Amino acid sequence: MDADQFRQAAHAVVEQKSLQTELPNSAPTHSEPWDAIQADYQNLVLPRMTDWSSPGFAAFFPSGTSYPSMLGEFLASSFAGSMFSWICSPAATELEEVVMDWVAEALDLPTSFYHNKPSSKGGGLIMSSASESVITAMAAARDRALEAIRLKDPTVATCSNWRQKEASNFVVFGSETTHSSVMKAAKVLNLQYVTVPAPYSNDFRMVREQLCQELESSISNGFIPVFVAVTLGTTSTCAFDDLEGIGKLLDDHPLIWGHVDAAYGGNALLLPEFKYLSPLLRPYASFTVNLNKGMSVTVDGSCLFIRDKFDLASSFTCYGSYLNPDKTIGGPQSLKIWFVLRSFGLEKLRETMRRGFQLGEEFANLLKDQQDLFEIISGPRLGVVAFRIKAPSSNGSSETLHERSNRLTLQVCQDVNASGQAFLTGCTIGDFYVIRMVTTHVSNSPASIRSILGLIIQAASR
Ligand code: PLP
Image (cartoon, rainbow, N blue to C red; front, side):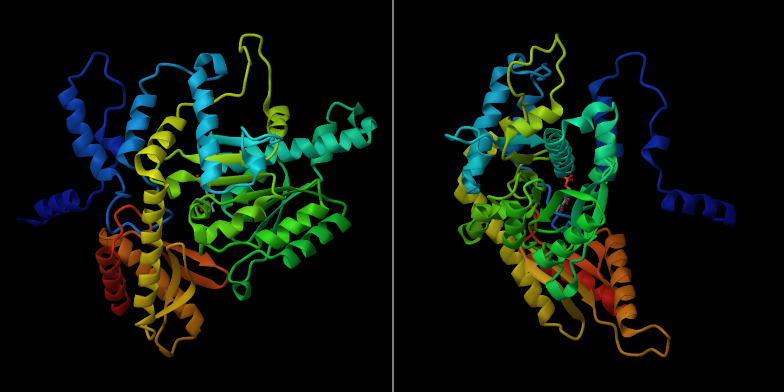
């Protein structure tokens, strides 16, 4: 092999071709045989998919699946309908209401979040994501606040752009560890966003006192707080914000819409040991849980529970004479949730969840056995452990021990991920760079978490 041949061969070995270069630029004019389509799927698409069901996958939060959920998706896609109003497929709306009430009951949510309870004005809706849930709730919160202002002083509504003018003073509150989707929703809706501290000393939780300070400071500067996002299970460390304390604060501020983002952590309400959280949800206007993150449901499975459906209706209803808007609208996603709940039953789902949480405890114990190498920064909590590598003391550089630990942790995370044998998420939290180990994925097991730890130790030793 000469140098030119070597260069050519080396390119072929290392070149990562993207699908854009592998696939034609245009759709075929005539039908192709299924075998050719299947072969391209197998050879070109599948190898480029990240395998969330691999035993080495410990990143993000789980995105579950299961045979009943897949069947639900499959059957849902067999309906050639678009379900934009009740008459388009009555069962879609009706099943969604039934299934959402099942979920509300399984999680012991306050009765105000049910569709079919006497005196309840609320209910659950299936959304595409927790991000969609929060922007939906926030838009309703904005419009509810505008309506309250108009009712108090009808003269504000005399100019055509009064809504934009009033809303320019509206403020949304979240913490340093609130998911980015909340800030993004505020940005899209053109509302101001205030970040409340959630420091290491509070285990990265947002607490009532710090929120209170930010609220008072905003009010004294002439702003109007309209929305607070409280997280049960933050993305970086699975921290639980001060649900109870902030709930009491909301009782004193009826204009503020309290939203509980429990995208991952909300699934834990299925377990008796977390039921103490359910009554604390009473002061909140909305609550989101992603069943795809904890209950073997395929994405999309985000449920948005609203205390007063009228708030959503007044914000989002736009009549078109052709739409026949006879009732609230459901979609076919309820089918897969219905199948999952019935096929597994709540007890089996609880068992699976507990097993994932237990693996988190086991992983934390393995880290504690190697205290010279690892420092746990937060957790274990619901199968999430945030930790970093302990740097060896001075190597003569100007870098502090803390900076070196952060740098090594980032390096280790990148090395493990580059191996292709495991996938971890690294993130910055406060002053720390941490690796998040998440043990609730579908294929995590005692053997898989040990093997991931082995890869981490190998990389750290290097
Ligand atoms: N909220 C929290 C706490 C999350 O951890 C996540 C994602 O992991 C989200 C919201 C966003 O979820 P989705 O991807 O469904 O929009």
